[in-house]
Image 1 (tube, rainbow, N blue to C red):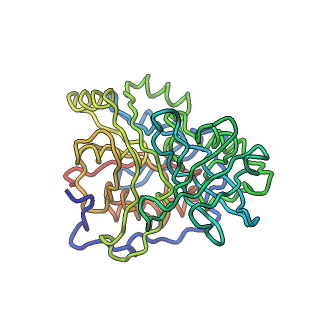
Image 2 (image 1 turned 120 degrees about the vertical axis):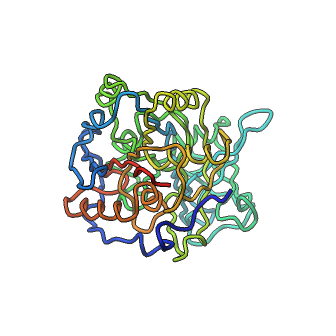
Image 3 (image 1 turned 30 degrees about the vertical axis):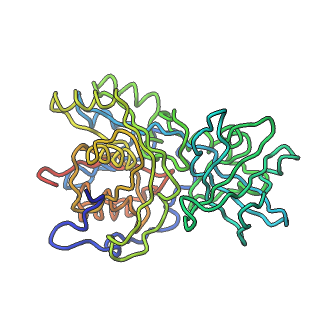
Length: 376
């Protein structure tokens, strides 16, 4: 079955349909002092309503099932240098499978460098192994010889695993629109980012970008949800750096979607079954949860890689309500949200959000949407 449907309404949507002008000052550079103090645009009714996120429990119904992504963001951005002294940056996208006789040391990464070293080269990360950091040997491209990513073998002191090396030497992989001084030797925002670019649901390490709709939840909101009678369940989708990959083709069908690993555990499958039996709604926390649930519904596979591309015209099978942040212009995430709630409705809500000075993107505010009745 195709991973995407090319259009909706009377014509196929094109890339330019998902463009909008955003004043740069609306791109949030820091989180709100309290997670649940961010704003919430209630976009379910014909007229948008401006709310605060902590009001969310009262907007849901007893019996609804809230599904969140429990992925944990890795400190996956690491700075180093080539043997020549040229600086480079790795963003570790995935730790490859473990070897039979112990933890594996191979990873897949994006490499940012002025001139790429040849396969077989060893680069010094965080000062190199002799200076308390570690070395990384370039093995080749991934997933094949023409792949966009690079495969490295990591060599640290005391045979530390890639997970341990990232935790000790890495930085939170904040998106490019958040300005930080991570490679300068002193980042005054590092402590705050380590805490706040991680959701309260985070359990399973593997993401290089946060499922940002979940960043607004705190203990107060979770307690209020439980008191309201809203059930909670988790899935895992390890968000990749490809989530920020721009769409460059006007014809959406020509876009090559990135792949991400997901899992729907048995307990969540059971919760979904109970939700349907009682006639309640499935509320997805974020686009990553939507991608996970709809991938499972379309394939029947509870775990694996998904490159599902959701655009207007897509037939949703699981999700009824969506909680999401505001997304980049011309992005696959904006296309997903438009497929869910309707292109005209979503673009109107974005115009309202800009006029009302909502904060955008990862550290920004949230929006609540419901799939229209009779929609595909």
